[in-house]
Image (cartoon, rainbow, N blue to C red; front, side, top):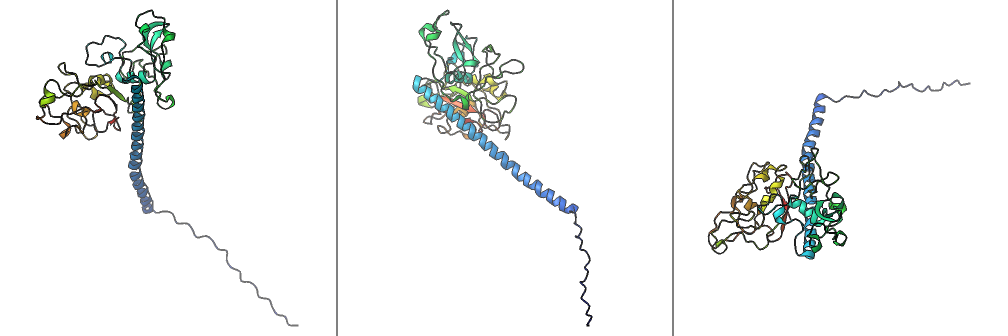
Length: 342
């Protein structure tokens, strides 16, 4: 018998995984540097995109407001607001004697959405009611409304609201101190709330969102007084009442917001807009230039010459004979090129 030995399989040693090599300090610093670089690139891009979105939303809101105002004008042949110009806070007129004086922007809400009520317990007593904001404005032209003690509240028509309340319905405000942040003299209602304003779509740059300012034009008023229209030699006034000469816009009404926007404190006859907080430059040399239609005159250096040569184009106001809506824009400062108009 042939005893042949079988081959014995070679025994291999058990393999062990190679130890992992840790990141070196240099590699960690490189990774951190790359991340920091990407963040530094992305943050301005994200900020720019967000600002663009806020501007688009605010521009869209102003367009919707303008559409509602135009619709109101189509119905009544007047621009919205139950309170006369003489009784708006900050007006240049000395005729105002109504203790319930509101701002022009609050007046817009009352015209489009309601909230200014002619009756209190069936007696003629105009007052603010936050509960009726969004229900539509009531008529103040009913002859039966003119005498105290009138009992015609049930006969006074309430008009439809001109805006979709779910989109633009503003909220009445109240500060912790119990004062109206938007400068009204109107008493708070029974809930302790003050009249609202339409606000822009930018994040609040302070305690309260920025209001969209509203100014009604003095229809038919030209930019200059006396013989200046024909000769081109007058002192031009587009946005103020100066020496008894009316202008298209009474920008003194904007001074009602000076507690929130100090630059509006100088929004007077011969005042100048403040310098741009971002660039440090004065975008408009005068408030007249700010309110002027840029296409009607060459605003060199942001200014309208006090005296224009004979034969010059006579500057006209922005949206002459109609109205203005103004948002302070991205940096929250009125009187700069960043402002958004209708």
